[in-house]
Image 1 (tube, rainbow, N blue to C red):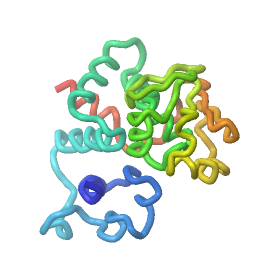
Image 2 (image 1 turned 120 degrees about the vertical axis):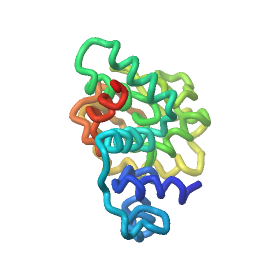
Image 3 (image 1 turned 30 degrees about the vertical axis):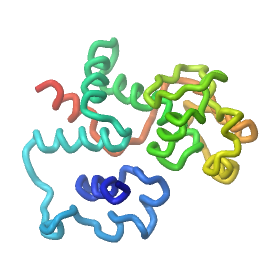
Length: 204
C-alpha cells in the first residue's frame, strides 16, 4: 500500500507530500526513480490531449486530499452552486477539511496521517471529538487533541514537530496547549494542481 501511493506521485510527475517528510527524502521512490512506473517508464514522454491534462489535474487533487470520485463530484457540484468564484470555493472547501487543517497546523506530517488521527478519534473541534475527516472547519473553530490521546505514540512527538513550525496565516496555533484555531477562511494557499482545469473537466 505504501509503495502504491508513491507510484501515484511518480505517475503524475509531481510531489504531493502523500507520505510527509519521506516524500522529499532520498528514500522516496520518486527521488530514487524520477520517472513513471512501469516497464516503459524511463522512455515515457509527458504529452497528450487537453482531456488527459484535465484528468491528471483531477487526480492530483484526489491523491493530495485523499478523496474518491464521489467526493470529488460532490465537492465541485456544491462549489459551483455557491456564490463567488468556483475556484476559490473549491480551494476553501478542500483546505477547510478537518484532516487538512490538522495537517496544516503541523500536528501531522501528512494528510494521510492526519486523516487517521481524526478517524481514530484523537482530534477535537471546540472540545468535542470529531471522527469525520471531511468535517468542514469554520472560522473561530478550535482544533485540539483529545485529552485521552495525549499518550498516543505518534502524538507524543508533537512538541518536536510544532516547536519551530509556522502555520498558514489563516490559522493560529498554541504549541503549548497543542491547540489551533481557524482565524479566517483559507487564502493564499500554494498548491501543485490547476483547479481551473478540473472545473473544465467537470463542465464537459
